[in-house]
Length: 276
Image 1 (cartoon, rainbow, N blue to C red):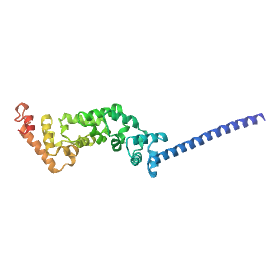
Image 2 (cartoon, rainbow, N blue to C red):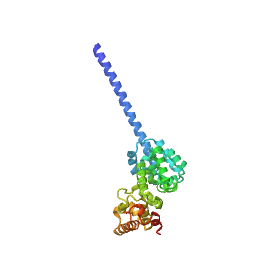
Image 3 (cartoon, helix red, strand yellow):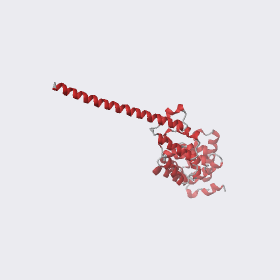
Image 4 (cartoon, helix red, strand yellow):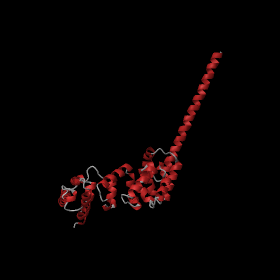
């Protein structure tokens, strides 16, 4: 009888424990379901189309209704229209986890004014690390490249290029005495984002070792509208453009007579630049 009672006590204890566990799981699942439902409702209120809400849920780890409302409030404070907010969240659900307030303050402290337009063009910039990333990029874009804050606001995609990429392009062009100042803002941005370093400037390999003559070539190529295509898409340059580049190189080689010692060259670097 005692053994049977002992057995029954254990059974009752296990049953009680199992009931607690199942109850906990049930209420946890119920709470998670209610939380998800609230999150999806907040997305709908933010203007996310019903057919895109599931995609947003899958694209972010955020499940906080309060956080959604906070991000939406920040975007509205920047002057972003309600219709645009839902579209931004649909296309870039990760912005719900960004520190928008902190990044907005950092951009303003560095002279950026049109935060709304910048955010609409490239919201990913507000998810990048500031220290050691955005701060270093801003420095190199402003100094060697001469991009103004307004230029960067208009072309925020340059902030998405890795710092190592920006540094690589800058060093490579500087070593070749490339006249960065001669490029338009659009050309600078295109080079920084997708310039083909390994393919560029094939026509001037013969000028390697003569920085002054390379610079003279760049200046003349720019004057003839050849600099941008030479940098951006050298593999797609027309036969005519390639021929004109080769003619410029041939003229510089002939006039400078680069195969003689520098002291015996018939024309100086300054004469090539001035054309006199």
